[in-house]
Image 1 (tube, one colour):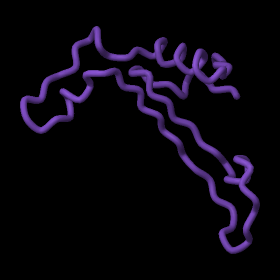
Image 2 (tube, rainbow, N blue to C red):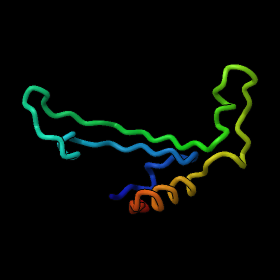
Image 3 (cartoon, rainbow, N blue to C red):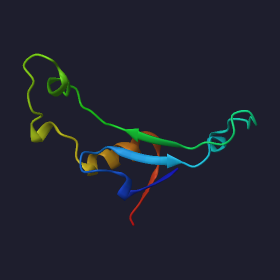
Image 4 (cartoon, one colour):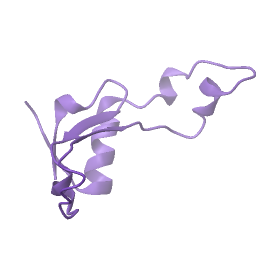
Length: 86
């Protein structure tokens, strides 16, 4: 339950890798073998749809964007992770 501060980008998004799927508690199956995963989490506030909709697209205002600090605080508060500075 720890993340590094460098895993967060300037917009509060998070990316990390899992080396082996057996780390998640899934039993080992020789037919499948061992594989890893890359996980990316994108945080959005209500109203972010205006950037992606087809008609009348608009830019997201700066006050509506999620900052790196807000993303870090969200994961600490909601998931109880430790964020380590590198």
